Amino acid sequence: MKIKFIFFCLLLFSFVNSQIISGKIISKENNQVIPYARIGVENENMGALTDENGNYNIDLSNIDQSKKIIVQLGGYNSFEQNVKDFINSNNHNIILKEKVNEIAELKINPKIFESKNIGVKSKAKHMLYGFSSNGSNQTAYREFAIPFSNKKKLKIEKIHLNIAKFKTDKPIVLNFNVYSKKNKQPGESILLENLTTEITADKIIDGTFTFDLNDYSVWIDKEDFYVSVQIMSGFRGDFGFSAALLRTVFERSFYSNWEKITAGSPAINIDVRIEKEERYTA
Image: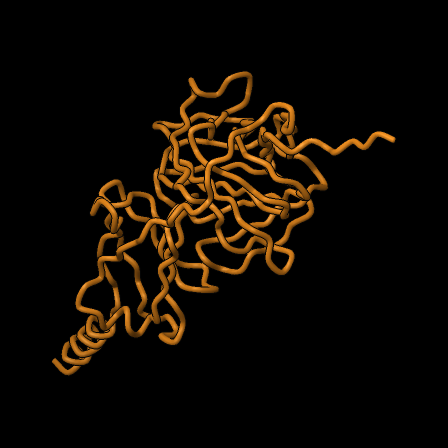
């Protein structure tokens, strides 16, 4: 009887101290839920993703309560709150406010801008960046960002992923982000819109999946930047990027610190409209 009592006390203690938080992530502007948003803790390799209905569950039981809960999504202002205050809050629905576009859309003059494709263009069939999944969201925890050097004004028109393998039971949701450069690694998102799309086998043409951004306003003005990609949904099967050796990529899980890897990079390249070089005549 004494053993049963001790076991019951331990179980009760565990339940009382469990900090599994549930809620929704919602857009303030239209009061709509936001699917496939990432919630996590600063500098920690843990977190959760919202489902198709914007719901999340995150376990904060063993987290330093002085750290911050973070939600970052392209096109929205970041949400940050002390873990302790977040746990003690009566409402765990997170409201994200859309960024205000204060940059006037520029008309691209063909005499001033030219088209270029930049980035990693390998179409190797061996997969240095491959994913195998049994249906869980484990693959969604990793984010890859590749660097771009830039000294001009440019507009990103398309993002290309060279795909080495795609055998999945369902479409895969991808989220793209564009980051500024800070301390020689990805910094803040500079997107004014959320870039989320689905990839299916029929959208992969000659080994390449293309996300058309012509209807978006993705401008970079004379600064280095990073383009990232992250799988945002579970699937069963295998999915992998072509890759290039001896190229730089930055990786992280949720909101952990970025890790710089120089062994190889996933094949991500972009079409841009970029300012032409000025030519002076004597």
